[in-house]
Length: 361
Image (cartoon, rainbow, N blue to C red; front, side, top):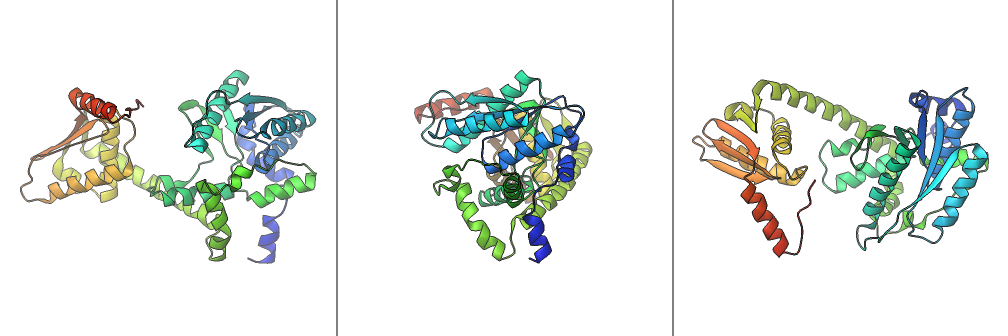
């Protein structure tokens, strides 16, 4: 990396740059800022407050800290955020994750609780936007995390600047204005402003996947696979995903007929490119089924089995169920419909005998 690029990566975020990052929030009446007290969210709070102070009107900023109650230091850290917010002229609220905490999957549960509480705070404040401090480094980690778990192209798009707030809060928008900013620049911003921040040791806990990936990043960067390159890869996946989705829309308009289920010419379906027919099948199952989003691996297995049946000169009758939908191939007719109720009931009985439950989505 040359010296000028290195210097830029370590330079504070200027006021003009921050104004551009927050520009699409200018006409929003109220904005909720998710501020944990760590370096990234503290920088978000400071940058947003400086941006707001330079404007004649709106939006009103409301900083929200979610205290998960998992560490004794969290109370003190929430208090520090409150004091900083008051100093910057920003309203602040601390919300608590009450109730029992799970023994496994604690990070996923904490994340779900955080977004739920942020959504509640946004509604109470009259806000439609919740702003988080996800950075370029977070984007790179997300791409690696999803790649390690076998995500398809859609998952490898990484995080978007704008998305519905997690947890089904479709009327609230999650905004990530710092997604193209390296963490090093946020640290430089705080250092220049002489603003302290909290250090959460769980961010380095090797029991969790993301800290382990974080440890790998310097070695990957030495091989050329740094955060910027991973983020560029995510942007290219966005382009590819958009092109594929457009191809699926066009194919759906040509060959699909929707009613209580989906009906399509088997030969028309068989002639589609594999990725298009895979996703088209997934859309049909999501529409006809009642068990939530279909897992990619299971969808790929069904797609492969269906492709093998279609490749036969005289295909035998094919019938498979997945995610509450039944896929039937009979001659030239390919249908995707809601699975019979008795199948769902049998699945529930089997799950009960195993000591598990079927989650309704």
